[in-house]
Length: 316
Image 1 (cartoon, rainbow, N blue to C red):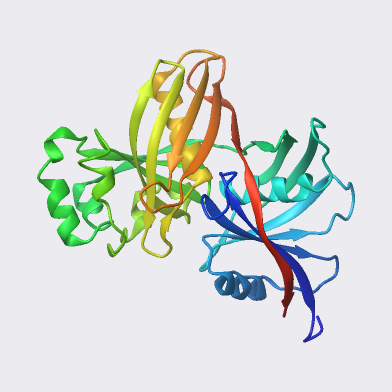
Image 2 (image 1 turned 180 degrees about the vertical axis):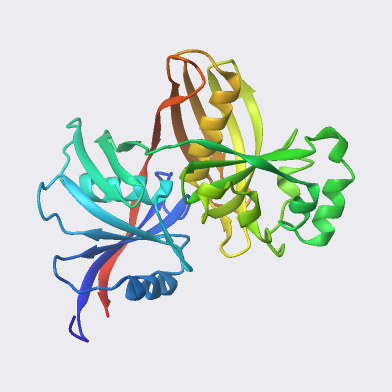
């Protein structure tokens, strides 16, 4: 790779149709034989300083199949939700006429993700191998996710909450501690960035599921009619701060709740609001269909919109 190589990039706000809300994403287009290394991709992701940056590789076979690498500011991820939706919107919005449905396959480290784009909305069939780990987190672990003064407020009302919290992976490498609170006002709204973070997170993971990203996902169920569920959520993690929209966590939570509800072949629909408290409201859609036993997940679909914010050239 020449020292003066340039790459086209775009930034988008994802899980929103309004600029400066939702979750920002950078998409860097990588030509074939560019020589761009994984280490340099990590440096570029740190430079953008978004929760994730996508490196979208030029198609080498079928034009509808594109390889992607997804990086946070500190590590590469096998899969993430808002990069998936943002990338689908970025690629297909440019070639789709109103009312003309298009499709694409993104090849991630977690597997192939088939997606469609219709009337401005991306719907992606998410790779999944849902696993509930044997270990649970507890209130001592919860104390590590928040500044001490916030935890002191929460712990005064802990009797209204569960005393343990499930640890769930949507795929190997993407794991969330699912922390349910009884209401928004007394719990979700008081959360703050600034806790030291979950320590020795690997201890939550069953042996064959190591290593993995592990983050806390706080949520309140607002409405539930048995099939359509509305949720308010926050994702606050020590290395990235607060995330305005976390598609992988939304898929993890939705799959877990669907399995808890059960029902052979049943379809559940989740509408998840995130980023409200930080002034970047996001709307995440997830559908989960259980298999014929009602004890496994047949498929997970993640959906959302995205809006272009900037375009430019990156010099490397």
